[in-house]
Length: 369
Ligand SMILES: Nc1ncnc2c1ncn2[C@@H]1O[C@H](COP(=O)(O)OP(=O)(O)OP(=O)(O)O)[C@@H](O)[C@H]1O
Ligand SMILES: [Mg+2]
Image 1 (cartoon, helix red, strand yellow):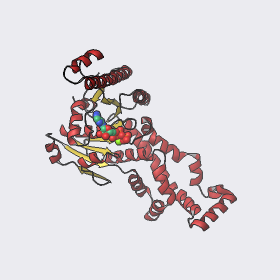
Image 2: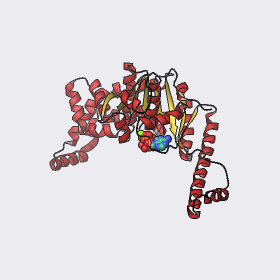
Image 3: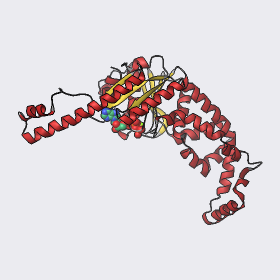
Image 4: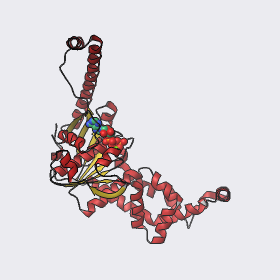
């Protein structure tokens, strides 16, 4: 079944665009937010790492966690009527993490101790899923503030769309993990875990490098202990918000087999968890073009207007494209069967990269058809 996005998003306050790497999540998120804003909503798109040209055209020239309004003149230039407001924000995961530490640290001294800590700096960049998690944190915060009618969340380029869904749980698990708890109680067992040999190694390291790693570690785990609980509670609340009926997941996929397989899997997982599923956007689809004349016949037709070698090349290109279109069509048919009537929206492979408001407008003709 096909359905336009305005129908999928009716009554929704949060739309999460998830999907595998490179399928068009960032572009789709921006287009959705723009489309709903044009229809009168106050929308914000929380985007992650957009292509530079897209960022520029949304007015996101600097990195920052602040929302920027996309000026009306940009829409007017693209011949668009904007009834609402479009705001864009480029998420900076590390900064969000730091803001959280600030919010939960009991006092400024422990805050600074954490932020300056070498281990923290590594960890906040590297905790598995921290980027996904931070994106959702920001989403949670903005939703609680209630400034926007609709928040559209772009998700980071994960290997796997499910990584995103699991992020809050993964962070909770990490915070609950026995190994972390072990460190968080330095009184009893604490850093003795390193034993004499390791102690000597750290001492040697300190002499040579001047870096007191042991001190860093011990400070980090002491300070982090105070935060762990706050983080954990938030992770639970973020998860709740995402399964709320006011939220919806839109899955973006390419029409390629692997990507479709993943979409099918993702859809099942959402259903298992009773998460709100809005529908699938199949992006960059090769759509059927021209008549179904056989290769030879097309070559003959072309030969009457082009020289023969060129005619053959054009005909071959055309056939290649048609094979792609056929393959895409088969994959999407398989997906549609799996979706059992849930919304499926197709966006064709556009001639140009989508890097400005005009490009987003073209995309919207398909998303909101
Ligand atoms: N329908 C389309 N037709 C043509 N080009 C497209 C289309 N959709 C997206 N693109 C282009 O494909 C590229 C990748 O899109 P995008 O950055 O949105 O993907 P992504 O899923 O966010 O990637 P990542 O996982 O790396 O964040 C961009 O250059 C974008 O302009
Ligand atoms: Mg992206």
